[in-house]
Amino acid sequence: MMGEEEAHGLTIYGYPQCPFCRRVFNAAASLGLEIPLRNTLFGGEDKRDLKEAVGRTTVPVLRIEQEGANTVWISESADIVAYLEERFGTTA
Ligand SMILES: N[C@@H](CCC(=O)N[C@@H](CS)C(=O)NCC(=O)O)C(=O)O
Image (cartoon, rainbow, N blue to C red; front, side, top):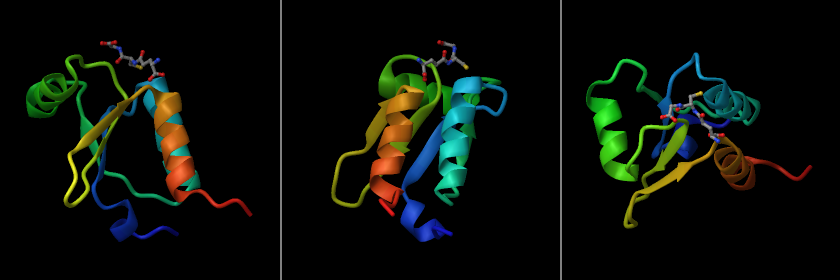
């Protein structure tokens, strides 16, 4: 199982009831990743942060924080899954 350390810096904005978010949760689980969720369903600070960063509140969105680099936000479930598979998947 991929340790938290390797998934460090990743955060998913979304909510469990969102089917597009579930695609991302499932892909993360398949890859053994534990990525923290910021639940945007009920508004609040997380939804505000998302809106501020990407200009809209459609989810899922993956936030990627890397030391020494700008924070990157990826929208679209298919793009997020592709990113996770490319970064953490094996070709075995
Ligand atoms: N094409 C997008 C669709 C995402 C989408 O429709 N998300 C819904 C929730 S399941 C949503 O955020 N709707 C509210 C909005 O678009 O502001 C994807 O695959 O990520």
